Image (cartoon, rainbow, N blue to C red; front, side, top):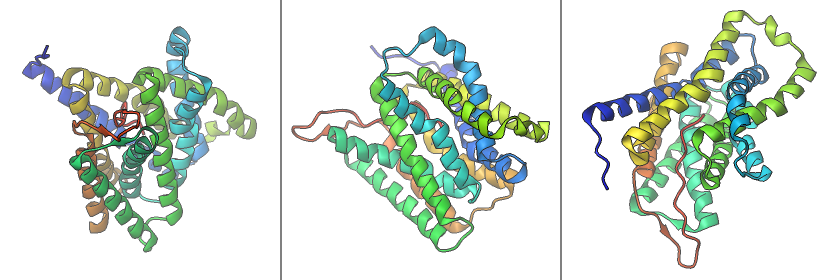
Length: 314
């Protein structure tokens, strides 16, 4: 049976997808703003993100539990997009402009998800997805060349963003094959990161974070703890519900461009032609890999579909 979507529902789905892309695209901008223009550092922002989101989602997780997920699966999900991921990409954002993150981390996440899936499950993609993969590789390499050639970015930051893409890919794969929905996966990551990270943070730093201006803390509380962890997820899930998973997932391709535009508006970071070229190449590659397609398993391999992120959770 074909699901009929009214024009009003379609527009609502599009607006929800755009809202999710905007919030997620603002992640590197708000994070870099906190790292470079306030007394907060990567450890403080990580504390805020998972302290707040963990408290918000704790009642949900207590009500629904693990849902049969193994501790190994939970551990990989937490490492993939929890406190370790946040610390890694924040180290990069403290040293490099948003444009480098916008190209390298989302692009390498999709690229590595495809490569790991092909290695573990024998998935073979069609010509369009292969072309998209080639474009992503080209864009990420272009950004790397731009970084190592002595532009504004740091080679160390480039490596941190690549590592962030790898961690994000691990989360994407594990959450996809665990069968966990986006909200449940987010609750697990947020609450477990809170439980594991906050005691270590408080033991080493105490409450010194409260010495920062209340406005600076408040921005990170609202964005990191509320918007990116829960509100954006609601918008994304609603978009997928109204438009379907295939079309809804394509909004992920808007995240890099959104990040670069917001960085120019809010941080004054003007991307040069090389960075813009890398962004366009990676975005085109993301669109090609995210659009609907039929993956073909290799002969004798376990046929599994190429993973699609449950949402471009940064």
